[in-house]
Image (tube, rainbow, N blue to C red; front, side, top):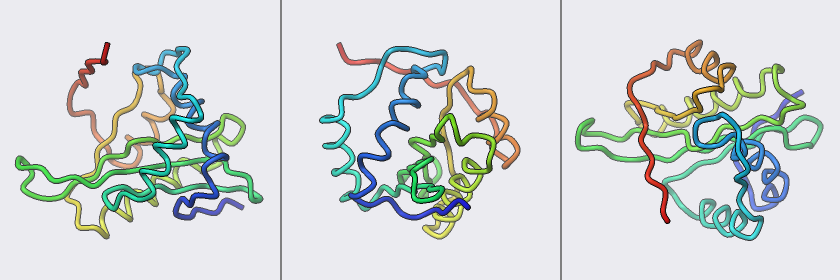
Amino acid sequence: MTTIHGAALSDCEGIYPLICQLASGGLDGSGGDYRPTYKDYERTYRSILNDASKKYFVAKIDERIVGVAGLSLNQSLCEASYFANIEELAVDEAARRQGVGQQLLNACMAYSKAQGCTSLALTTGNNRHAAQGLYEKNGFKKTGIKYVLEAD
């Protein structure tokens, strides 16, 4: 059985492999060699846990971390309200197609609604077709193109 809970400091090490799986998809989801160093990841993870504008959820099966989803709460002049953005949603390759992604997405949707957000957005890679199907099944719609400028 899958359980979902808010991320805690004790989850740091178990989440790292999932972030590496997600990051290795590259910015466009087509694959790549990028993965954050553990030191950089851990520093960022600790910072996120102390940031009131962020919320992360962890999925476990039999006490093993198999998924993570994180969102940030933002304000927008265009929306004249709060909105949420899913920053990461990753499910271990061995645990996919078991409903873990749906449960994490449900947690993000419920949390953003409870916080009064008027919308929930996310970005996914061009080649992440299974993820795109999950999002579309849940009512998400494609609305634009993302541009990225990487630091030198």
